[in-house]
Length: 447
Image (cartoon, rainbow, N blue to C red):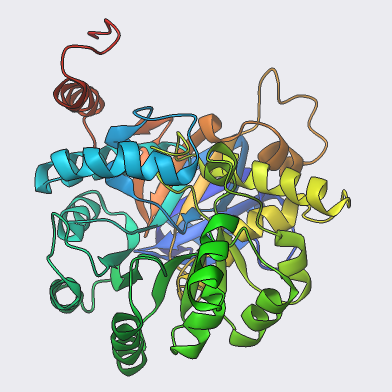
């Protein structure tokens, strides 16, 4: 039998496919045709079975599914380090919201989203979810650079730079959804900002639309204990119970943060089938609290990972999030095995795909799925001796060791170099925005 022609054959020292669970394959190859994975087998077999147009040999690397960042505000990368060391409420009220009101525009979102996508690709993220103003600009950049994404168009009762009131937010968002209908990389969902920025009527309208369109909803929920306490003091009802009453809490709901949960909240969440998106580093930096990941997983809640914005993190490296999530789960539960290395990686891959409704497309290295693939170099000082590649990925700083990234079978990073971005131009734009926002008082930093 003659070898089967394929577009790309990637061979690596290790492959961690995520499905089946806990599997680590040694000296195997992935065969890619077009945008899909069509084979995963030992390298010796792949060399006989396939005739590749391109071949990549990675002798010291591990291949994993592309990481999935389930929550962020990409354009806020232009506010990285703008306001630090404050609790959430004052950080938003005194610094971030005034800066956004002054500076956010189509240009701001375009440039900030491009900077964020470059950063995510370089650290192994192939798919992201974004909730921010002017989502059409983020979609434009994502399409230009071939990133997979979910855009949660923002909805709130208050006016913003993008829309004046609830109906306009929904109208603009649905128009964006229609425009990208059928797009293989971009999906559009409802981004209900938070229980304290939407009234009951607007939540009910969104719930009706989402049900009719079978669309997901993303919402910041139980982000701090203060938020929950204020809601109870105002209405006698916890925010998650309110969303359940209004028909918002369903298997299509993505609940972001979830740091202030009691037993009833967790029971309700598990019964609803909703997903939790855990943003550990942002929650820690803002002193917002701790998501009880171990308890949620015990009752069957799917937990995924997000970075939140670079303004509150201050980076978009999802390897850092899965490391922090694993350590926090151990410390909070008192169980060193509460979130092991394989489980942490699943949260950042297949768990994220499930939360975004993309588990049939991405999240694992399986035949028939999209070729969203990341290679990490595990050779070098600080990585030796190597007993277990999953340990190196989760418990050491792996993000900066990403060497290759493919999205939908298309190379985005090769040998650590971005292919479709002009890095010098991105850095120049970021510095120009810094100077515009901070004026001439940028601590004397001019380069």
